[in-house]
Image (cartoon, rainbow, N blue to C red; front, side, top):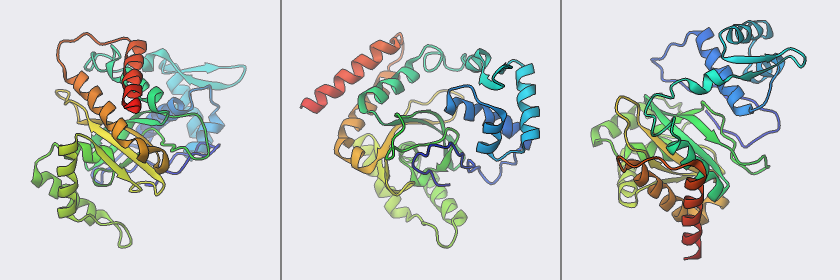
Length: 291
């Protein structure tokens, strides 16, 4: 899957799924509609949804009508538009409340977004892939890195994946690299296992991962692995953008990510409010820049 720079018209690349996942079409479309509406953040028509996701308009209409009936979407009859409801926001809020419901993780992402003005991504491991499950985008611009929510990329070629792989045993890293090579077309990019191990050793020493031009030729990403949530898949938090914007401040981004991870790792502390987190992280970043 290729993540392209932003365009005025929203077009969603199909998320790459592990080969063993056999998706039920109607179920996958429901979640893709929710992810699309989350990306749009405004009322949207059936035609917009169908065109962006490549679905037949008739089946799209039937799906969103069912989602309205179940309370997951709100329908505005005069404008004939749909919007996600508060019921969606409440789903899963009980899962690790200090990270999600009480705002620690989301406020950290907002703080990073405010501090650096680039795309901030929460990535979750999904088999050999990293799936981007929550994204904060900068304002539209010709050079920004636009990443659709739900996108998936191989762990071995993205910074979020390297941040997670740095915590894994050597044999699992080798297995992921060999699997990637086996699934890669002849003209694709193969992974040298020895080079990958060296890269991950550098990540462990530095505390964060940074990759340039590996997923998008003009894009870069800096990432750090989040503390493991019991019973949940491993996650990483990342800041991405154009190479020219990220390279000069890589160390600052890495320091801010490591500070955020250390804060989340501290057990028993009450989560800070969104504004306080944003002010504190932005202030720390400003100090780094002055230094």
